[in-house]
Image (tube, rainbow, N blue to C red; front, side, top):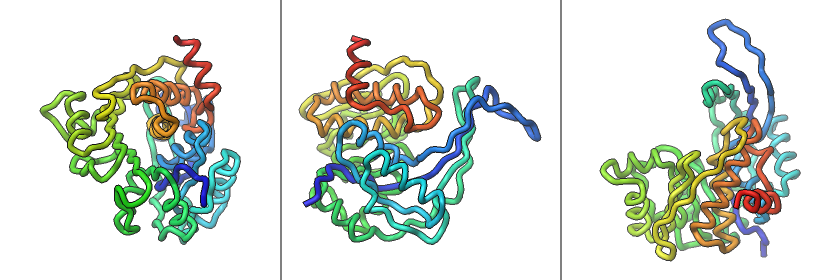
Length: 297
């Protein structure tokens, strides 16, 4: 029997990130304050957040048989994330070049053609069948039907719904986490809290909307409608903060916190991750999170 609590299924990348004051113009060269290579992808970053927060975690997805793929495996090994569910595909490992601008508090991203996802290997299927939760991103959610994974037939399903979910049936998952912008597209005539409550009540699940620096709003039948404010930190880059939030939120839910407390703690984890250029290096562990919250109380 596996001791893995969560399997994260979806995008796995290696990214190159540069931090500049202002974006370069055509044929212009600008000095970067920092340049980093780091692991990325919504499911992958969430897996690292979960592991740092004390949740036994595995990752499933596809990488290439190349140096970037080898680097992916080294990163997850260092973070204590089980990689036996990763499959090797025929094309290069997915990756992006990202230029983050301090002046604009924004980023420009150029992404290599996403690699073709291959079928889940036998170990991935075994891990998923024995896990408490399956966390999926926009790529992982599209693999559930082909793998005959449905809500109620195996692990609980958590969905990072940050991409184009205006028509998604939220009853397919146990934890539905879109952005506030996605909720506007789903329910253009409702205020955010009412929209979150409607999805949760109709789907009989936990629904949470992320709101960037403004925090997050959630609803469950147990908690009712709750909100938690965000935290101000010295921001280097917000790259990956949403992915971090998803992993942190699921960790808090698993560890038995109320929904309101889970939102507060996940907001703090996401904020603290923004102290680094990439999405992973500054994710806190539980002791660091508790220390930060104690200092802010």
